[in-house]
Image (cartoon, rainbow, N blue to C red):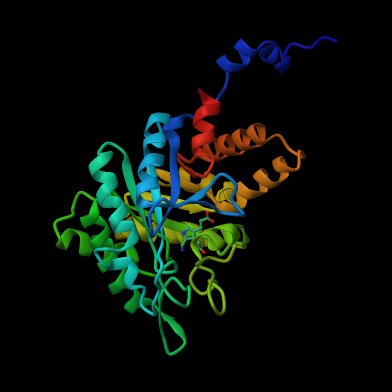
Amino acid sequence: MDLIKRPRRLRTSPGLRKLVRETNINVEDFIYPMFVAEGAGIEREIASMPGINHYSVDRLLFQLEKVQKAGIPGVLLFGVPDEKDEVGTGAFCSDGIVQKALRQAKQRFPELVLSADLCLCEYTSHGHCGIIKDNKIDNDLTLEVLAKAAVSLADAGADIIAPSDMMDGRVAAIRKALDGSSFTDKAIMAYSAKYASAFYGPFRDAAGSAPAFGDRKTYQMDYHGRKEAMKEIELDIDEGADIIMVKPALAYLDIIHEAASRYDYPLAAYNVSGEYCMIKAAAGKGWIDEKGAALESLTAIKRAGAVIIISYFAIDAAAWLK
Ligand code: PBG
């Protein structure tokens, strides 16, 4: 054969393949999501998320040390409170579980970037991400509570506030509240394009946050859409978001790619609980190679354009990438 171009030439050795590699994932790309529970001495594995635990604050601190030693720049904290009520008091009270964790974490690990998820669903008795009035999620009433919660999380030591509720206008409301309390330095990482997804299932078990009635489709986005994601991202940027996010990641690589090419803002992608547990479950049965499948997925997320990858695989990936 008279072939001038032979792409296989560049695949002939590991060294050559590395040299021409276009995408490298790095431990510094990751944010590790963690669940903080009330109590002491608690390290309770989440059944549908092998390797991921609920930690009481004392145990969380041990784990944060591991995160830091692994070289992962930051974590994203979720609360698993003992008590819930109609308005999600646990989200904004100064002794809320995440607030308590932040205070200690900030003191012990000042160089770790602490992000706090900001949502009501873990704290409301009905499990919705907003305040309910006349059997409906009331957008504007919810904004007041989110703004209060943002200030409380910032005050406790969060460096980044990450609203995941999908209410209209939340980024503006949060920015205004933070600035009004002289937290002008606290960044907002907005879950901008957050789809109503079946891939959140294990998380809702983990956070005990499944809605008691209905679903989240009146606030999270319909997965058939693409333009709507760009609209949501633009709104969040206009309202003052510092980092934008697409969630989930793997079924939404097209959205990540488009957002990365359109907007000059750091883009995060959330490799969610369902994406994690599928690999874990298949690997547990010996049906798939865990490390191979995880690294391939994480690389795809970066190749699509994300600069921050929020993943339950972060600690394992840090070890694999060494
Ligand atoms: C809270 C929230 C959810 C996740 C992150 N923040 C659940 C949901 O919206 O129902 C999902 C994360 C995951 O699945 O790993 N609103």
